[in-house]
Image 1 (cartoon, rainbow, N blue to C red):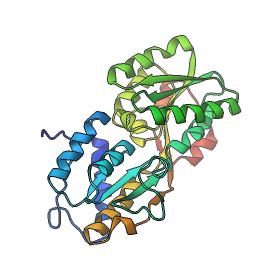
Image 2 (image 1 turned 90 degrees about the vertical axis):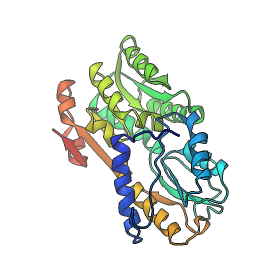
Image 3 (image 1 turned 60 degrees about the vertical axis):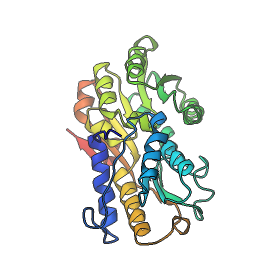
Length: 294
């Protein structure tokens, strides 16, 4: 199997994962090695990637997405699986209970999808007028549908019209942004999804090129030139996942490790992009920001 080099944002996450592992006195190169696999935003690749890891009889499988966790759970009932995801693992059928996950799967869940309405509220402070658009992944139907319903309700509460846009490939990302102009969109909210995270840099470039104020859940987006990011701290979630992986390597069982909840939330504002878009960020938002890029 050809190994694909991980993008920079996943390298950063792995560094946080390693810090969590070190809390259990495990060190890469001395006690274990990491075999990296990246689906490149395509869930269709996941079963094959997981099957390869199972065949290699790895000690622990760690996954960053809900589809990845489900693929790993389907592929093996014996190899421990640790997830770090932004959705409800009980609702998604990954574990039967947060306190008693049972079986061979446990991990960390963070506030991600649940923060969608808050992202819409933040954009409402930055862009007082106009309609909004929500970009969802057409290849992740269940998540896209639930996020669309939730965000439509939030938009109605704020008195905003919300258009739903779909994209599941790089070409469709281009088409989605091109289609914004006729709709006279005031701001765009990108739904929390692994496909979009894997294309954070491209989304930031497209948003700036088309002059659309845009918010996403991953700080990589804002650091790459996107206007705003608001979401759970990936550093916090990955340190917790690394700590759990280390405990499993030390002999503990996933069934005995309750699913942890990473609750730290970060707001990143790119002032350089705000200036380019002719926007003024309210002082109240700047005061709340965990990071301001100038």
